[in-house]
Image (cartoon, rainbow over all chains, first blue to last red; front, top):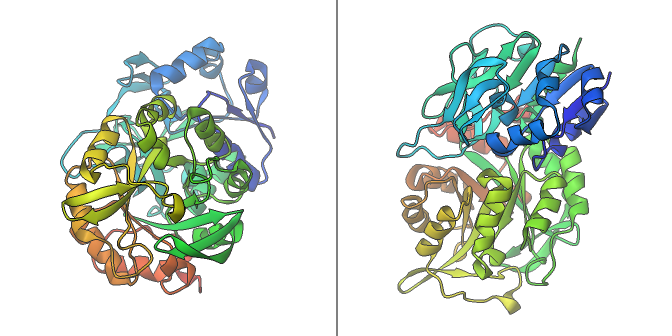
Length: 195
Length: 264
């Protein structure tokens, strides 16, 4: 099994590769369309701003490549947001694989942005990514923008409810960082890799 | 609801973990990876590594050990020490750090904060602030890793907390120097004052000696995380027991599967 981790140019993409290494999974950090198409699993990580990342994907001719993937795909953090139709961050169209617009989390007294730290999920439906999880685990989040909670597989809350895990067909994504979420994140990544 | 973060801080010198009192007299506390792995297993929510010799010696952090930590550890970690330009920050982030923490170089050139935030996003940019009480309030210190080279940048702590947020800081670690290493409790008064003007996550640093100090700082200063070194390194406070106790006292902490079974 080869796992393609799409090199979208963000700062700490290495973390995802290292998490896969810890699970004994072979992966390659790439922006080569053929490598991505032929991989058995594809991960779309993302750190940075939505408009900037969409530009990077466009520049490397990866927008249609990603849209056309049929194997299991996992978006992480910004990678989740990019699956939606558009984002308020830089007011950019995104990949449009899941309906909805990504918006900024609300500013409110006592509510810090970025939403940075460990938070819990509310699973709304059964999903293969949740196998082996009790449901009360904590995951590590770092973000200021979030996708709508409607239709999400799992939600979380920071000022408002938002999508923490989404799925549409072979495309799944999580807003938190499983690669930085200790044992719970490891379980989720292992679920993504398992046949 | 987001949990408060318990953050062991590892001062690093020549690839080893060390700890001093009031920034002096450092004692060897062991191997970086061993320490980091133990804290991860005990349920630490995040780690901070300070290369304490980097800034005073005019050099930047060595990325080799950052790579080793990143390969081993699956919780977030920040690296501090002599990061004074975008290129060095990039090297540290690419080596696998989640955040970079900048202190003295930002004082020397505040625009660095904006450059880092614009390039990597605010979420990567932590500003470390060493603050000391004086007659008129709170003032900054720089180059605190080396008492011989410590300087007084003649800046009010409040003004700096406001300025770095405007420049794009994503988090502030406020180290209250009068309290550092002496285990008499966090400087609640100072932290609460800065909390009132700090919209980004604020991490308390300096002074933890007993579990009550953690409860105090979360309840009274409303900080997002508490950083400590001595009490964790010495084994005086066990993280799983601390987190259980905080939770029992109404402060939300993360439970890690299996972490309560760890015996220190």
